[in-house]
Amino acid sequence: MKFITKMYLLLFVLMTPVILLFVYSTQLSTKVITNQINIANEDRLSQFMLKIEGMMDQVSNLSNLISKDPDFTKFALYSNTMNRFEYATLLETIEQKLGLFSLSVNKMSRINVYLPPSRHAVSSDGPLVYDAEYLKHNLSTRWTLRTITDSGITKRAFTRHFVQPYQSLSNPDKATIIVEVDLMEDNLISLLDEYKLEGNNDPFFYDNSDQFVYNDSANVEMAELITKSYDFEQSSAIANHEQIRLDDKKFLVYFNKSEKLNWTVIDYVPLQDILAPVTKSRQLFYIIVAILLTFGAVSVILLHLNVQLPIKHLTESVLSLKRGNFSERFRKKPVKEFQVLVFQFNEMAKQIQHLVEKVYLEEIRSNEAVMKQLQSQINPHFLHNSLAYIVSMAKMNRTQPVISMAYSLADYYKYTTRNVTMTTTVRHEIAFVTSYIDIMNYQLDNIQYSVDVPDSLLDMPIPRLLIQPIVENAIVHGLESKLGGGSIRIAGIEEEVWWSITVTDDGMGLSEEECAEINLRLDSSVKDDGHVGLWNVNQRLRYQFGSDSGVKVSPSDGGGLKVELRWKKL
Image (cartoon, rainbow, N blue to C red; front, side, top):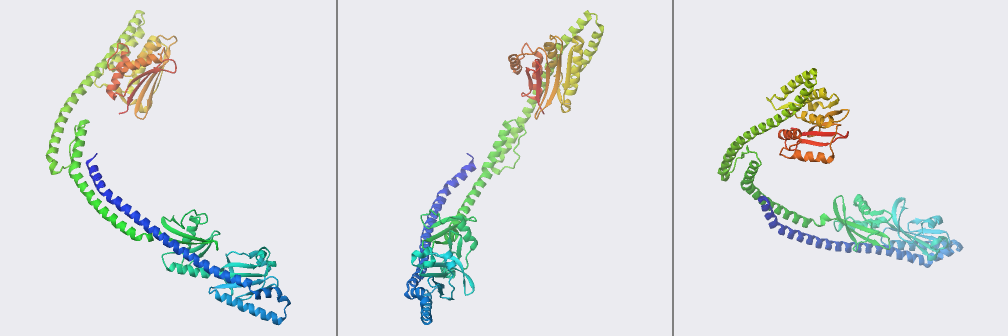
């Protein structure tokens, strides 16, 4: 493990218990505060709902009294048979009672009384026309929010009907009295405003039909977003609160549903506002910890720069020297404590480089001598075959082939004995090989050949006499003993990091096992008695282009042999 890593690890071990203890304490405090606030807000919201239900119950009780008042019943049943005086007197009485009932509620409300037997209707707000169709389609014994017109002003109100007898609810025409109570929405808005003034809250009413009653300063967009984000009707929460995330902020949402009204009062508070003191304390602690960690990190860095880094750079220089980079020197200015050590290292590296370069030059000269020796071994092999051909032609008194062969051999040895450089180009080697095939055709007269080498390969440098021994083997061992002659195809291929030249014939060929045995012998660094030409070519490729280069033998698709010369791009 690195020194600086150990120092950072030590700093981490020292600070971790402190941070963990504070985090645990903060989480515990946050949990306690949140629980207490949840309990307080749930209780407050519950009391608020009880207050609203109490107001509704008060209105309901008064409406129930009206439905059972004998004067209203009498007017409903007998108003059509009364004389004008009795009718006017009783109507005035019930209107006065209706006004008193409306005032006793002490809330903004309106009471309408419908009398189906007499087809009359009275209201606390003035004259009212009896409308049977209205009652038939709008009669409800539950509180519902609807839009009404009061003194020419359109408002929203919670409405409930009280029917006597109750069995006539489905058929209003058979009822004796129907009392309609309109509790104005302004009453609930006023209560919501009072509730909001007591804390950092934003209460509103909501029912499952997406109807809302907001306070006067409500955040309507946030209220709608909360109701869309959480299903209050299907809530499985044990307590009447839930923590939700909106716009990357956490909110505590409190809700209390009234079974009497079938509405839910919802309140929400940003969690960050509740936990502001705890958050401030936590941020202060984190700042202090950050300062301590910064001082610790700076101390570790100074130690790293002045002690560990010089040692690391010196170690890297030693490893680079070990890998063979003998020109490696420690070039960075060392601190005072390391100056003597760095100076001695640079002197040592300088002496090692001098000795290694001397040995390397000797090795280069040795490799050149080996390559020349391998190249020279090819010439006697070919010369023997060529002279045998000349002797054969001379015995048959065929002077023209002898003359042509002699000139060709002169050109051949002019090419092969040019030892000023040990390399040639693929273009010159291919031209030399085609001349060689022409010479062999003087003897065999039945060899066809083709050359397909890309232009990018023609000017690439290769060792001399690299392809000719392969072609010679193809003719002597593959095509010479085949009746009807044969063909040779020379092809060049360029790959991403490789060059290759293949010599393919359709001669006698070898089996897979024989090819594998030859490849195994070629990989040996010791020359075998057989396949001298292939072995020489393989060794020369390796000397020139590296150990990954070489010769590979395999059966060709035409039944003959395929020899691939493959070497890396330099």
